[in-house]
Image (cartoon, one colour):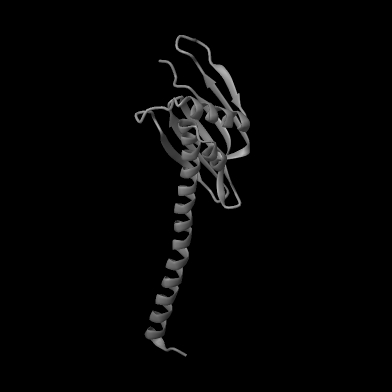
Length: 155
């Protein structure tokens, strides 16, 4: 048995080491989760920008629900725009075939709003407007399961 102050000191160092080791695991996992969420959001954006069906498939769950609102220049009311997973793939294919990709100045920004262990939410800024992406983890991979978007508001 360790005696007195020396035994307490060794015990304190051991406990502190254990607490430090355990607390760093969630931080690393959180960092990896955030990176995975960002990658899924970028795959979504780049899939549309580049016409990459591979990126759409990697970042978006096949049962995704996508719904948006857009206005053409001069229109007063928004049009409703649902889009299925298959329609996303078709859109990406048309972009690739046409060769009409947004230029490097086109907005392409991801803002991660929240990440939990199974779900996450991100906001993306794109040439067509702003999208809110709800995600879930499937077999360790982040996938977009819901998208709500709108074209830029008219001032």
